[in-house]
Length: 218
Image 1: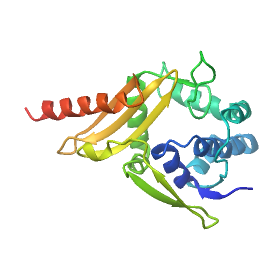
Image 2: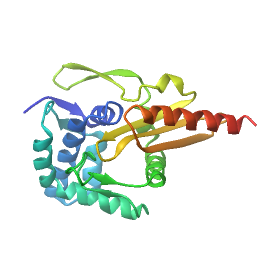
Image 3: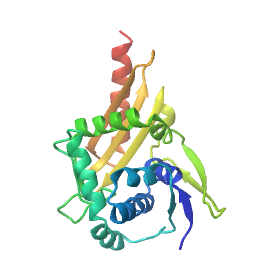
């Protein structure tokens, strides 16, 4: 067995450092509870507060694809929750969104759906999104080993009122970026860029952020 981490720490690594290994570890933990108990509530509790075994750093994309096939209960749960929340255009094929092949993405959704999903996360647990606003952070496993990570959003310091963020990139999806920021007087705004380039997503996002602040300054 590899190192063990709290589910909260793995969630932070997954979101802020865009770790696919962390995403798979969480998915496996939830799948295990779904398989044992057929209990969605228990599975969600594990994902939020439990201890999860990690230690898959360096796992190949091919191995991830094999794991994804064993995680069908979790993927089905994601699709069911998306449908329940009214995200008609959102679909998941694996826990990370990594491309399944040269012609098939690992997840699909509109900018509107992604923004609404972020709103749902904030409504249920605002601290989750706040885990993503540090440029660098450390996580200590239950085994006592410290790991250092950098946020994959390189423009955090340039966004006034930043609350949280999530990056994404695949060959098929291009460069993607979500930012939640407060323009003042507790007025949070969610901006989403999809289908840009690896670096272009940051330029595109800054244009949206600057335009938003200019609008509210009138």
